[in-house]
Image (cartoon, rainbow, N blue to C red; front, top):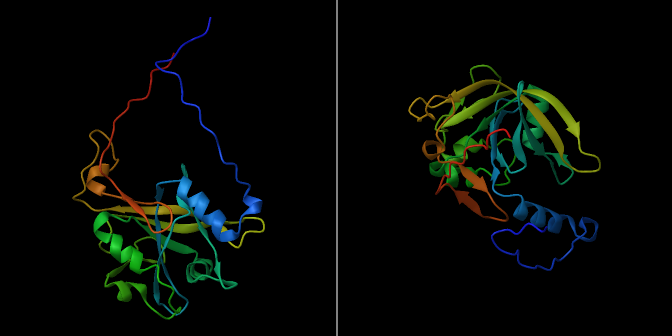
Length: 217
């Protein structure tokens, strides 16, 4: 006997796209327009000369909770490692600053291509504070910060990027942020995180739906 659902699903046609048939920029545009919203890895580091560096990366996410690991894909610019990659390799440390709505414009400004000797904190008007457990600065106004030590660097085949895995040594959460009752989790409506969409688009938190997990059968 056929099982009927609440309604018959609509019939769609699909446009099939092989990544090998696209230019590099087109692959980036398609991928980042579909995997959305993505958390923003707003990475802060010290250079070899002690210059503070701050830059956002959209290929970022949590990888593990025990140990607490995060990953960020950092590439090259005109064949040379980006400042973030160079700094992390030298210092083996970085901070991930959570981007809240009030920091969106400053985050975007920090994405500008500038010379290595330019301090992006000064460029954006943000205050840098030293991390407690690792050799890196962080955004003093950020609602939460993950202080990370380089755990592993993973080559991504022929890609110009590498995956940097950081182990979180300390989590700094602003004390006024509301927590989910009975947990150590931060209430998302208090955090007001920003998500990255495709091209120059971002998502803001407007509605949170609570769906308890189904019970075991």
